Amino acid sequence: MAVFRPYVRETDQEAVRRIFREVGWSWSARQVDHEGFGEAVRVRVAEIEGEAECVATSCEGTIRHLETDLPFACILGLVTSRVARRQGLALNLLARTLAEHAAEGALVAGLGMFDQGFYDRVGFGSGPYTRSVSFNPADIAVNVKPRAPRRLSQEDWRAIHAARLARRHSHGDCSLAPPEITFAELGDPDDSFGLGYFDGPDGSLSHFLWLHGKEEHGPYRVRWLVFHTREQFHELLAVLKSLSDQVHLVGMHEPAGIQLQDLLHKPLAAQRITEGSRYANRIRTGAYYQFRMLDVPGCLAQTHLPGTATLRLNVSLTDPIEARLPDDSPWRGCAGSYVVTLGESGSAEPGEDSSLPTLKVTINAFTRLWLGVQPATGLAITDDLAGPPELLEALDRVLRLPQPDPDWDF
Image 1 (cartoon, rainbow, N blue to C red):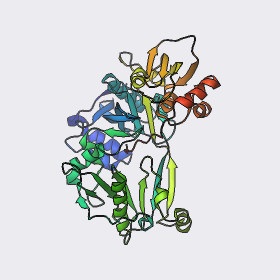
Image 2 (image 1 turned 45 degrees about the vertical axis):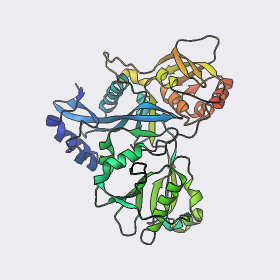
Image 3 (image 1 turned 135 degrees about the vertical axis):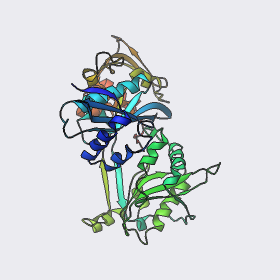
Image 4 (image 1 turned 60 degrees about the vertical axis):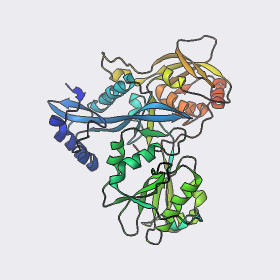
């Protein structure tokens, strides 16, 4: 019988370190040695025969819906040892972890998925596609002469974290609260470095690049690119371009709302010419994040759709997580019937109104609809969402949201 409980550093450290090593997470294995492990992040374990065999790590943060920041629970890691696979430990531990965050006020949870389908079983739905672009920095079409940037190192982790939190924001972006999260993700000093500018009104770090890579000619990976204005963004691209005498390939995620192809010389020709090379130029697209609501009335109360007509509907919602929660859990998931209002002021009230059309939907698909990952008419084809055609079309008109972008790796 598995026991689910908080991590105890004195007795669990070696077992958790071993779990991370067994799944190939060498950096996470080293993190366990840090004194802040278990303080900056929430750590929960599943124990079998007195030994931790599954571990879940999470932290608090925010997720932005249009211009409103909502309390967010980020699942940083969920791993099971080699001897405890296929016993339901991971999803049961995850369900309990989500219940804790929900009870403390988190409205939404998110995680990075290893593949489609697994986390759907506890109510997660796939997030938006993100694009990763690999290009020769010499091809950057920005005619800016950058100032000499300041060199950033691991010692600047607090300034880097503060700049990440204060960055240019957009719909769907996530921010993780503990500064130690940034410290843990900086990487080894031998193969990571930063370049940036301290132009904040108080001399704070305003815009910067953090890169991974140590080979003479690359590839380099831009792990973080933080900026506020067009001028700052172009200056950072010009800094990347200045490395092109030596570095032949740089990869990065596209910032929200920006199409990097606009700022590259002949990107399609570069892809054809370099195909199959170590320095191949390419654009890759995939959905790597998943999200789920933890509190439907709480999320809808913070949903403001300016300039749209008000739409009212019944929502009949199912949630698969309840079966994985213990009987004494005060949070039971989000299943139920709601009367939902969408417009300048949103709401979700328990109950039904026989005069309104009804949307039948899982929490997975409803979260995707609310975030704007896909329109209702599209989700009706690919996901568990159904309703009268005129209701789906009305939802498409009301929920005209920008493409969400987490803009924070987790």
